[in-house]
Length: 198
Ligand code: ADP
Image (cartoon, rainbow, N blue to C red; front, side, top):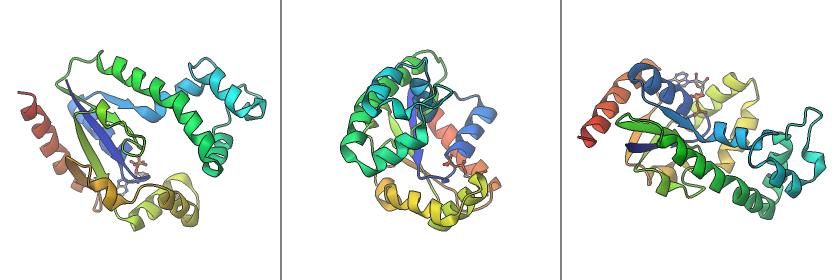
């Protein structure tokens, strides 16, 4: 099974593109963000350790961990961020590996927004970077999340520079045009990944 790590900045089109691979070609998609959310849920494997790290004030009335609170704390404190990553990352990696083992398709997509930043390259065989212009990121995310472009800009600025990310790419999808422009790029890559597994 060929493991394709799909990454890109906020609003680059990771969800749009991975959905297309799944819906058109039946390619399994593993979502690292979804796994993190499950790990942090009250029944998740990272819940107790995370509450111990951040204290009871990170728990909402619903018993869920307040992810917004965590984000703010780790944004302001690198040591906390590293400690949280030490809890979460090994568990995310273990879960990804166990999900990969369950599929019997020729390849799968593993969507990891911070694939390069969190040094998870060893989990994948190839890296597919989704690239879009900064302006598209601001326009599309502010429309998607109903937030200001300034807010999106802060997030984009905190992420890895897109030129830097592209240096790690084995494959690239450029998402600067219409959605329809993605279809051909995805089809070509699908064929390439099948050919690589022959
Ligand atoms: P990511 O998962 O990388 O954050 P999304 O796939 O959610 O990005 O895309 C961000 C937003 O932009 C979504 O609302 C999506 O529907 C929209 N979008 C993605 N690609 C295009 C495109 N080529 N043209 C217009 N809107 C797009």
